[in-house]
Image 1 (tube, helix red, strand yellow):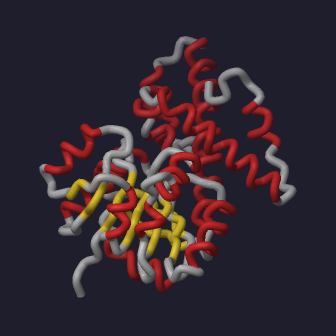
Image 2 (image 1 turned 45 degrees about the vertical axis):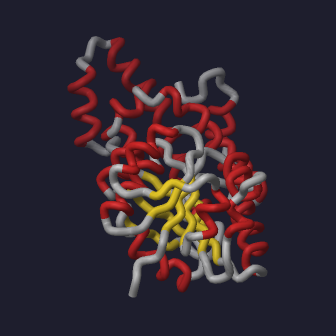
Length: 266
C-alpha cells in the first residue's frame, strides 16, 4: 500500500524535526512557509516540497498535519484567505497537533464530518529533543479507523496513546502540561532553598533525579532554563486547562493561585 502524501503546516521548533522524521522515513511531505523560511530551506535538502500556501498544501495531501502555536494561528492556517480547509478533499484526514481547547476540536470535527473529512486531535509531548529522536508521546483523540490510517506516519515521530474520541487527546495533553508546567516553579523554590544553605546545585539535581522527585522537568532542566521565550505558550496551555476545568465545574485551586502571581512560572 503506497504511503500517503503528508501536508505539514508549522515548521517551528517542534514541527521542523517532526517533518524531518517523516521525510527520513520515505514520506512525501508538502509544506508552506508559516513564519520562518529558514526551516523550509533546511528541509528542502531532505526532500520537502514547498507550496505557496496552506490551501495548496491541503489540495495535494492525503493527511494534513498542523502544529502552530495556538487557536488563532490554527484558524488562520485553516480558514484564512488561503486557508487549508478549502483545499481538503473528501476522504482526507486533518490532524491537529497544537495544544488547543478540546471543544474547539470537537466543533471542527463535526463540521468536517459533513464534508467526509476525518479529524484527529493529536498534540505531542516530549520537547524538541523528543521530536528529533522520534520519542514523542502522541496523544490522540478521534475515531480508531482514522488513527489506524495515520499510524505508520505518526509512529515515525514517537509512541501513540489513543485516549478516546475527538477532544480526548487535548484533555490528556492539558492535564499533562498542567502537571509538568506547575512543577517548574516548585523546582525553582527547591533549588533556592537548597542554595540558601550552600548546597551544590549539581549534587541537588542528581539526588532529585535519582529520588521520588524525578520528572521530565528535572531531566531536562537545562532546556527548561534556556526556554524563557516559551513562557507565553506555556501560560496559554495553563489557561486552556483552567478554562477546560471551569467548563466542567472542576476547581483548579493550585493553578488558579499560581496564575495570579506576577511570574507564574518563576
